[in-house]
Every structure is written in structure tokens, then in C-alpha cells.
Image (cartoon, rainbow, N blue to C red; front, top):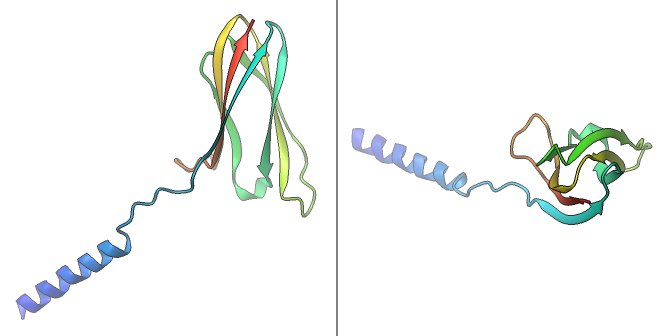
Length: 126
């Protein structure tokens, strides 16, 4: 009887392993690469498409070198009822000559590893 119970338990574990056996790689991340050149003292905008805020997704960013470029402002275009996408505008200011990268991420802020779209922008400041 113990042998039958052991075999049944092992079979159940193996079945459960097959059900969840494939690694969840999540959604494929859409990545765009851009390169721009601006001048010291100039402001520039990064405009991104976003879904309605009710989805929980939001755009965020990281700047690799804050001594070259700094964040100034952010605005959203209001989504009208039935409109599936909106625009978000991020304004940056070029501080000094150099090169930096801005990594824009479209994700759910409270959940890690849920980036579904990203833009990597190389900024050359002259």
C-alpha cells in the first residue's frame, strides 16, 4: 500500500511539473533605438505612445549621465472615451557637452519584470 501511495505521489509531482514545466518568458519587449544631437542649453522632447492610464502601465525613464542631460517636465495628452492610445511627452534639458543615454520603459511600476516596450535614446550634446 505504501508503495502504491509513493508511486501515485511521484506521478502527481511529475504531472504538475509538466503542466508548469515551460519557463514563462513573459511578453516580448519591443525595443527602439534612437540617436539625437542637441546643443548645450537646448531642451528637447521625447514623445511616446501610451495606452489609457486605467491599464496600469506607465512610462518611466533612466538617464545614464545626469551631468549631461536632466529631466525637466512631463505631460500627458488626455485620452478621450474610446481612444485606445494617448501620447506622453517628456522634456529634457541639455546641460553640458557629452553623450548620455535615456532609457524609456513602458511597464507596470509596482510589478518587476513587466517591461513591454522600451526606447533607448543616445543623446549627443554639443
